[in-house]
Length: 278
Ligand code: FAD
Image (cartoon, rainbow, N blue to C red; front, side, top):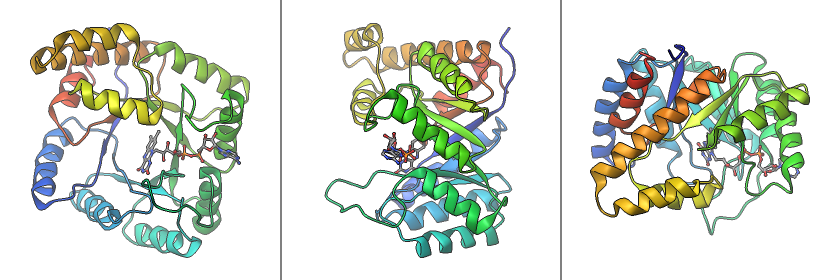
């Protein structure tokens, strides 16, 4: 019998009015599952930032807990300070603090280069007001010089004041367990929450995974490829694989789960219900 642990959900800010209306529906369905919080992604250096604020405040106004993502790449300290103040005034208590990735073609820069500097800045500006989540990479960040350098970078984020970490998604339980052991050996004791990616389209997943450095195991890739355009089989196999992964992580002691909902209610609800987390 799988243990009942808490879970959280992630949305991206919709870019159209139709998307906003659809997300309201999705949220109403997912809120019934009673997640701990809903996080909302934030586009570094892009034009979508106001939409993140709109989505965050709408969630908060519905009486649910919203956790905005905040990235620092390409931003000034003044602009980040202004955002932190805005969130504080609205009673937001949790932030996912990231370096972020600039859209291709946009120049870098900014006053804070890495996520540990952002965490340090948030603590210096706002003390203990926010609970801070940071990103973790069981398969290591694609730009890391090497595995140990990435672990050291993770440790700096924790030392700067992170309360908890959410991982990049992965499909290999051993990668998570190994990362957790490495962290423990380095004296890192914050909860490391697995990020879970429900699979609805294999082509999208493959594109996304190449970009963010998440490995799709060969056996999964070959099986998905064998379904071709049969989307029902892709979805059914995706649900089985991801539910099984999440169940193994719970059995291995994961403190909580964070679902990358992709703004869809169906796949996440099915997995959460199958796991008996509701
Ligand atoms: P960092 O922790 O700063 O690490 C980035 C890289 O720099 C790593 O390779 C690290 O090893 C290296 N590094 C760190 N410190 C140093 C140093 N001092 N010297 C040299 N190298 C160093 N992106 C968005 O744009 N918006 C989002 O909303 C968003 N949400 C996310 C949520 C989660 C849970 C996760 C896992 C990722 C998310 N991302 C988001 C993607 C993330 O922004 C990218 O993975 C980004 O490339 C790294 O961000 P980070 O906070 O992990 O960076």
